[in-house]
Image (tube, rainbow, N blue to C red; front, side):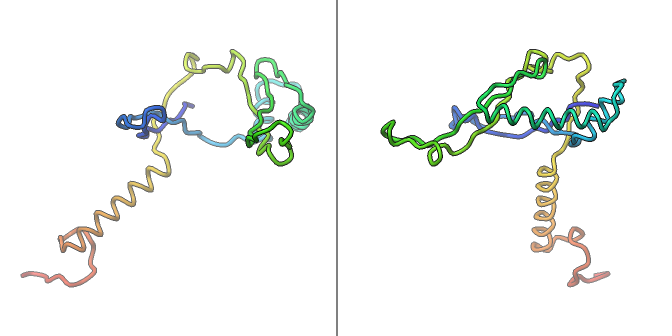
Length: 169
């Protein structure tokens, strides 16, 4: 397995007048859901069954949510810490602030431990270039536009047998 990436052109948001540069974007291989993760943990030699592992993980998720809603920060050891962050609308005076109307969202943030801070130096890390669905769609659209342009301009051999051509000359 490898980390798949695609390349895309983007402007620097801090300096939008500069020309676009090419940046790497991570692409995932597949979505690993909770049952699949529990099965994977079991396959790594766990003495517990997949169902027990899945139950513990589900309970951990429920308890973490409960602790976050209670205003606590949850430290998950090597996984890192989870905490809430507020996005709110500003008001002119303190007495005008009402969290029910002015807080727009309560987001959960993750602060990774050193174990997860940067995976780039992991000796098992491999890279694989991937074309995204968006890039494939753009290529197909470009190809279709080129074919349509050739057909409309009467260029032979690019648009199929829609009729109108003579054989033999």
